[in-house]
Length: 382
Figure 1: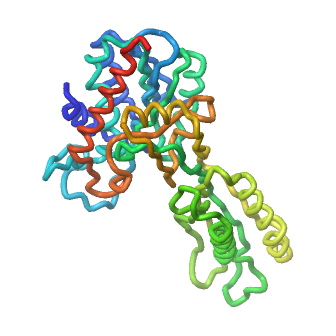
Figure 2: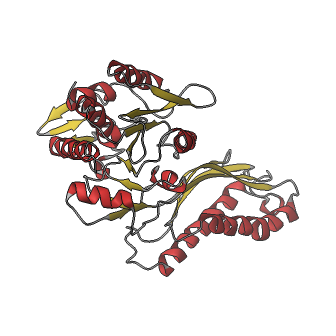
Figure 3: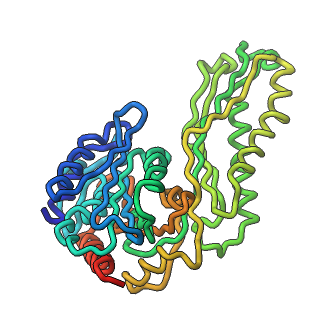
């Protein structure tokens, strides 16, 4: 199958993060078997999802890992003009959920398997689950890669970068903060502790923290926005207008530049809750409480000036430049495990997560050209 045919096949699997990715993983496993390539599955605890890794070529050091996530974001409530899980071509664009983020990269690697027969150094395929919900799946696979494959010279994470070299990304910590207040009639505010109004104070504190980071972070550090951001995505609480609320919770994320320590920022928030808010709440009702639970975490991807992976992809793309991106990905996890890592893949992040997500045929072609250059590079004796 060519790249387009494989992309059609991969998009047809509705691998939204809340669903299993096993049908797609088994399809890839069967496809690899057709070429005599064995693969290893690394499932989650419930065995409902799985990573997959495989080695193509000789079992020697110096190869390259091609990393891609198999899950996609939901389509719920989005006004798609075509079936999200059927690739639809129009005016040089291929529409479908995951076409851009990031099944085109995976399809390209699989389509060129017949051209990998002369590899002198291996290509390692590494496919993960649950990247879109906090890069949850990759770490257990990366742990195995460290000990089970010959040390590679580079990891290429194929996130959509328009085939530009990306040498750094922000980290992410996702949290849920739950406030337990004390109910009373809304006319007796001195007798109750409003969970909703307490949550409002905490959200304001987080926004103030973000604004302070914005004011003190140099604007020329390569990121846009340059500072560590804090964002509250959802908030829910209360029962009725005339009841002082007992319960409220909000979900928020912190996206840190590599120079900022997310633990220090989280500790600052916890200190405010513990030392400023709780004493006032418990003067009225001792059982009141604030609890923050971490939902997901991925480390920042740090720019390394002498990165072997960056230099390799710059040479293959004939582009000496590099960029830094504000979204989180699995590159920081590979780097944290000791791998030289770079991000580069077809498609634009501007199209990701939107209704009518697409990748252009031009980007698909550029990705295929790049993959062929990588295969030639790994097929020489040098």
